[in-house]
Structures are given as structure tokens and as C-alpha cells.
Length: 205
Image (cartoon, rainbow, N blue to C red):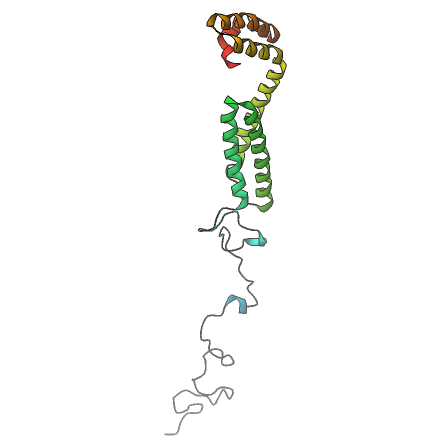
């Protein structure tokens, strides 16, 4: 029996498609070679490159902004060190203000300066400055209390200096009582306090 038109040795006809040989070519697209693997995104013009993962300290964020978080194993940044320094200065200012306000005033001002510098640096670098706000709060309280104590000391300096000089010369408790009886009424009158107030709170001076 003669072979049917369009049939070859494999039983599939190719005489009707002169541009195709046998079925050893890629089905569907004979004009393209077979791919060995997936095409990367960089080689595909229809897909832009993917943005970097946000929130990762080891990868830049979208738009080129630096990440506010540091990667594990990295030391503290200068902004972070300034924030902690402001906190320690503010805490030290609060403690020293209760015992010796001139030192508390100096430490409080230092806490404010360092805290403001840390906050500005963190805002400029879009980072975090832990402890900076707490240092600013403690430093502000210490400065306010120290400034009040300083103003009160200057206002009552004649009475306070006279009282301290009188107590320094006293030899007995009777002499000390005489100093209190002399200067306490003067301080009460100058501060417009009720009579007998210095007998309760005189030790604060």
C-alpha cells in the first residue's frame, strides 16, 4: 500500500509544513531555543529591579535612606552614645541638686546641651537617640530647682551669711538658739512666711 501524503517515517506528516522538520524541535515555538533555567529579573526589560528590603540594617532602604536600626554586632552609634550620656547627666544633676545645687546646675545645663544635640543628630540621620528625652526632662528639672535655690540664696544672702557666722561662733546650744531667735524672724519677714515657719523648715537652709 502506498504511503498517505504528508506522512513520514515517524508517522507524522511534515510535507504540509515545509518550514518544520521532524518533531525534535521545541513544540509551539520552533524559532526559539530551549531555556536552561529561569531568567533573572535584571534580564527581563518588562520588570524593574526589586527594591531593597526595608527595615534591614545590612541593606539600604527604599529611596536611599539609612536604616535607623543597627545590625547585630555593630557598636552603638554616636547619636545613641549622646542620648545615654544625656540621661546619665540628667540623673546626676537631679541627685547633686538636692545636696549641692551649684554642681546640679552645671550638670543640668550639660544634660540639656547633650540631649538637644542628640535629638538633632537623630532627626538629621533619621536614627534613634535612646535616653535623650529622659535626660532633657531630668536636666530641665535640675536646672529649674538649682536656679530657684540660687535665686533664693542671693535674695537671703545677708540673713543666711549672718546666721552661718553666728552659728560658727556659738559654743553651746544656748548660743545656737540665740542665733536662731535672731535670724529666723528676719528670714520669715523677708519671705513673708507665717511666724514660726523657720523653726520647722530652718534646717533646709
